Image (cartoon, rainbow, N blue to C red; front, side, top):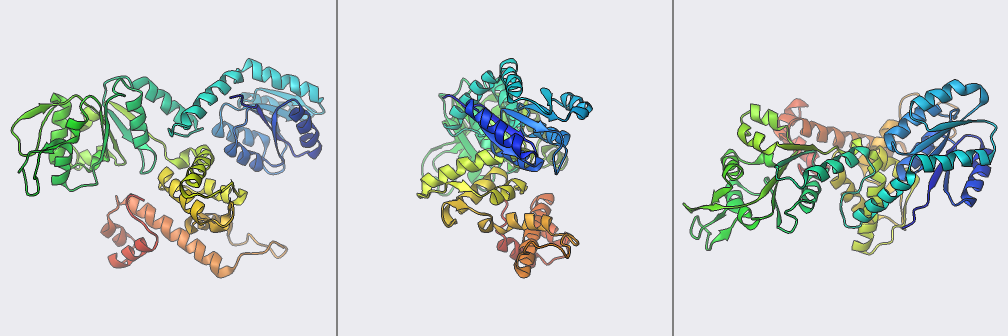
Length: 468
């Protein structure tokens, strides 16, 4: 695969954007242009840009502020400053902030091409392109999709620890992809040819969960009509992934600890210990140290599991991943449901990127599936996004005094706008309140002085469930 090198010209002068852009395009570069700083930053979220030609004097925000934001979005983009002759001090400040070089206006197109080509040679972007090719190939196998520096660092750490025998504890909010990381560790380990077995510790009552983990003998309890092998037996030679380990009852915590310490267990109803060779990876969205203080989680088990801790950042802390994830999910659901959604409108994309995604990637996936199924035509538009996503933006957009007497822009319908804002607020507030109280409904209702039944009615209205 031969990846085209991309350049963003971020300058408020139309002539520079037009003629320099045409000249660079003729040389084979993929050229993007933007007049405003925020417009350019939005492009950087949507596209991978190799080189940014950045004017320090922009109409909306300063070029230095844009440079700081670029470093957050894609630290590997090369930034070349364009500045007026009398503004050299600002250009020097930009160099200190990580810009590669600067040119003063007026300049010749050939001058800037020399700087650009030098940047590609000296900084080694050819090597970066080869790395991106490997990542694109990996994405095609359904693995993690990311452009985030935080996630790149995390994946490098996974490469480092995967081939060890250490137990791993993955921390992260619901929907951040903890099982994907666990599966990746397994595939990169010496156990890759063995089974990868996963169980959600919240999915079954205690007696059934014990049978699922350790198996049972015939007649061990009512309904045990035959011998059943448990997951620790089935996974011999492979990996067991215990999702939401923080929900595991104390009795079963002791039995998992025994597996870790002695590599042995007993089926329910048996006196015989069986040996197993498994690697355990666990995950939780809880604060296990707090659970230990409350005596709901064993400290000895915690220290045996927490040998290699990994923390997954929530989607709101890696917003540069939202656009490539949207592209991936749109393509995935197009094939799954037989649609042909070809694009996401800019306004809709901005709303999706600005939203905080309390349910993380799982919530994003569900929203995109809904939009692919229900959108009219081949473009996902802002007006068809869920209320909580549109409502957040509208709430941010409407403040007293924002609209003076001279504003000619048409306002949305008052009642619809008010309803969207209120519903967006209610859903987001209730979700954060439930998260704060560990989804204790009675406690949450008391805190806002609401009857429990009324609180539950609102939860049903907004489809709030613990595993949203």
